[in-house]
Length: 568
Ligand SMILES: Cc1cc2nc3c(=O)[nH]c(=O)nc-3n(C[C@H](O)[C@H](O)[C@H](O)COP(=O)(O)OP(=O)(O)OC[C@H]3O[C@@H](n4cnc5c(N)ncnc54)[C@H](O)[C@@H]3O)c2cc1C
Image 1 (cartoon, rainbow, N blue to C red):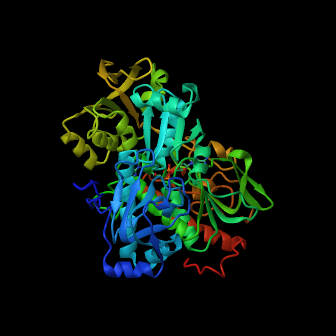
Image 2: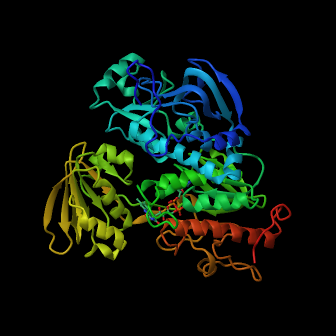
Image 3: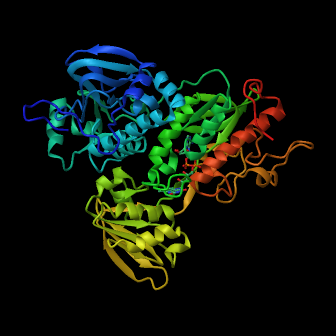
């Protein structure tokens, strides 16, 4: 966005569909759900940190959207016909920027409920708005406009905070105590001692000293739901693709649904830069966009979501399932769906502990790319996740070394990815190899790679190590209340029936049901599942159909009158 020669602010051009100008009929449609309001220069329409605020459309005048800690130049300037707002307004989180009227005029204030109506009544207009807000959020993340996180790159607490923000797609600017000249002066200005870092700076001068992700989430409006006394029809644990699909299908089919998530919506899919094999998206879709769309959809149907909330145990009480979460609160459900997915195993090689918090990553997104721009990096793993990471990082790193145990890339990786890697000039593939050790005192300096057969060693200079080796299901919280296989994956259906010692005449577990009646599992955490987004989404949807069947069979369904089921 630029100022004209006379110094007047000018509208920011719309380059990618992030600032579309609405036409007359679209404006007329929005007028039906909005309220007109006159504006004065300097008037704040919304401010960083505000929750539940309206979206606006400029009818007359000019509105600037600014980062309060860096107000000049504005992030964007909007004139008549343009939407003023950000994605948080639809997902229910705090806004990260501030909108200030520059030239007086008139705006249309659109409450969330009105925007939802539009999305239902006019999908094309709804999608135009949603798409604009999604692109804005990506641009905002790239700009680092929003919160400030100040700390040392070697601090595990700082790393935890940054990961939490990144996984939740919340824009922030990282100020590194070790390298950024402005860090010292900011600390002095705000009266913060270096040992009090990491800090999050918020609303200009508000400083959160070393907050936990849960504290930060509360401030940002993420942690919404209080454990209610009432019993939910369905408690879903995990908001990856499987859990979110179950939330959408469950809530839309009349089940009172709550989703409990320990880190961020989207699960593993948001650690991938782009998903190219999800049906209906020929150009690919980012896991983040898929997750945000699903969250908006689930909320539209009335599903509740709480995060970061970690399920710690699963019990039974008074005939209901009890999911106890951190903080020792609990949620009760007629049915529970385990959709806690998997995580990548840590690489256990000499030297890794010293560099773990500064240089080892288990995801490859914009956040990680920023940390290793123009540096050489090593990616370990032979599957699709490693392949995607190598492709994505080749755009940011000076050199990418892909280290895989397999003899051929295609052995565990999709052909399209292997072919693409073949064509990338700055990616070197080390097949039949594994990491022997890493070197570096606080930050990674090199990765020593050893061939599996001849044990020949090669030292690869690197500043970041990306690990995508073998997965481990998230099942610690389940104790022994469901049956697991030898690798820890949850047994369901016939697989569970084989190990259940039920009463005579008891119905065998339904297809995705565990040995515990009324507890289902879907997605990557389930034994035998296909580890793909589409498969997880399919299982989340299928689980809801089976849950209805279970509720009907057990007479627990109190909704059947309200929500007609189409179960054959
Ligand atoms: C880097 C990468 C790239 C990938 N690329 C592709 C691709 O291109 N195409 C494709 O089809 N698939 C891809 N996948 C695989 C795909 O993302 C997974 O198959 C899919 O996300 C599985 O979904 P899920 O819901 O079963 O589990 P997850 O996505 O693992 O979600 C589980 C959720 O449960 C939460 N959770 C765990 N424990 C608890 C607890 N105790 N309490 C509360 N919440 C908990 C986790 O935080 C997580 O959000 C990729 C995976 C990775 C890691």
